[in-house]
Length: 89
Image (cartoon, helix red, strand yellow):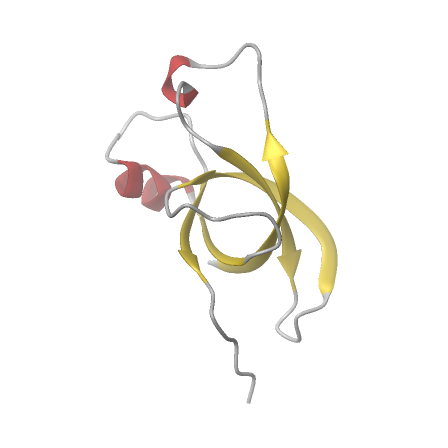
């Protein structure tokens, strides 16, 4: 799992039927200190996240498919939580 920040929405005109009606978000990866790493990914939103929010992303295909309930979905990343706070010790 990774912590990231929602940077925007991804809109497609042609896509796999699985993605119909699903919200895709561009997520910038954050370091444990909260700084941007320069990496980003596209994830399905399963929690209603919005622009600028810190989110928890499951970035592993099998687990992501379990979250959406489809064993055959062409999917790697899904947002599974909105992060309230991160404590680094």
